[in-house]
Image (cartoon, rainbow, N blue to C red; front, side, top):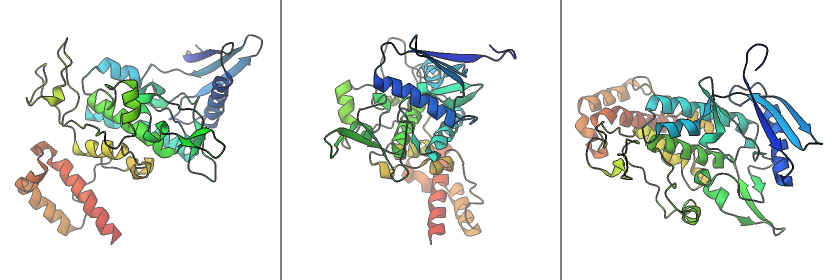
Length: 333
């Protein structure tokens, strides 16, 4: 604690048993944290000291009350709520936008690497992050890195380089996949591959034939002592008696597009930040008056939307997606 009664976190690392790669990771983290000094979306490093005689590294850092992994763990199988999901999602995107603009790929995005500091999520742990060369769009790594549940398909696939070493090519889109997995977890209470054994998981993540499930309802209470998935029930309530919460269509759409196995098909951070999930568009202002009249007619005759098989409460989300599509088509003419 400082003289101003500020609380800091001290990260203490022993080099005595660390290999060269681990030491390089710690040095890399210090370099990148210095690079993002003063940025509100990145955890702050105030000081760092290496004691060569004792083989110790001390880092004085910004203190966080908890991390997103702990928040999700405490919530259990309860849905966070859309307001909370939107808030956290935007903060996560802003943090990754910061490093992507500096041509840095984090490569290990997961809930534990988002620290909650005075109510805001900040990105931490840059030990395996790496900068993209000015003349390339990807980084190359000799080893698999990251946490398996959040690793992108391209992070798992390995390619043979000309020099015989096994290398992986990772671009910004790899971070988008990891963000999509976190969004999925905030919605459903678990990651899409969490129930698979390790080798099955490593095979399924890059396999297009493995279909990622998108249940129609958000996470709900499970009865104690059971492993029954409430999303598979046909009842309108969770086992604890509370009403099931449908997954908003905009949330479903964003999860699906972030979890495309082809990196080129995933949305970028700038696109995600202006997506209707975070920025609901005005139905009255998005299109000319003629289109607004058409939408008014659709509102008065909701049976037209029956083909989407959605509840009345979701009609606005369907219309918003429709308006956005039509608006983009009109702009492209």
